[in-house]
Length: 290
Image (cartoon, rainbow, N blue to C red; front, side):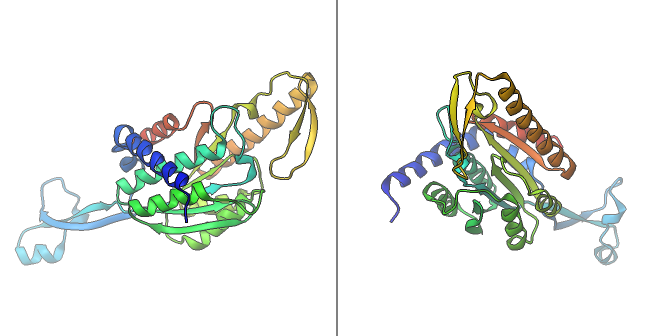
């Protein structure tokens, strides 16, 4: 039995995300992602300037005049949400944890997909793949996906993005639009990412919190690694320590940027401080122009 508060939360998310989809994303999602191919629609008489390669020679021979084949884009897509549920998502210094933001933005993407009659599937992972919902269509299915994200309780605390991508490549053999949602704190997933990027239209969504970028000078603090449980004292007043921290963060960010650039993977960056709606809208509109 799903608790009443979870169902209420699902309903709240549905109302909010549907409003955003209707008011801000209408049309943008449709244009942002290409269909899987072209589907034959009908034939029509040849008009001067038409591509001669589209002439239907059988119909032309029957009718005694040239006819061409018309095609329409096959719009039906499969959208896979691959979501990091590791313990580092249980952090937030503003009004939401990173994990909460991930659930809400996935809901927005899912409702955008079903608005266009696309299928939606879900992979939830930590250091292991812990949940998989095969892609299907319809509102009830999307509500199931959202409930799973809200009600999900991970068995493990760590992160293995590479393992999740390998799983995706096994279960999803057809080309899909894949949204990989994570804070990307861990590494070691370069090869599976390259494989997934060749097979799918892969978009990464990096979720961060401002306190991960800037730690105020408040003296000695005890920092805990949410995924390993390891703790360490950190002197925020030490310029040397803060410079080292910033260099490590900048280096990690630069390596991610280079990996995504070299593999042709698009990235959407969202923060618990500024929200996710504007970055996603900007991304869709940028994709429209390509």
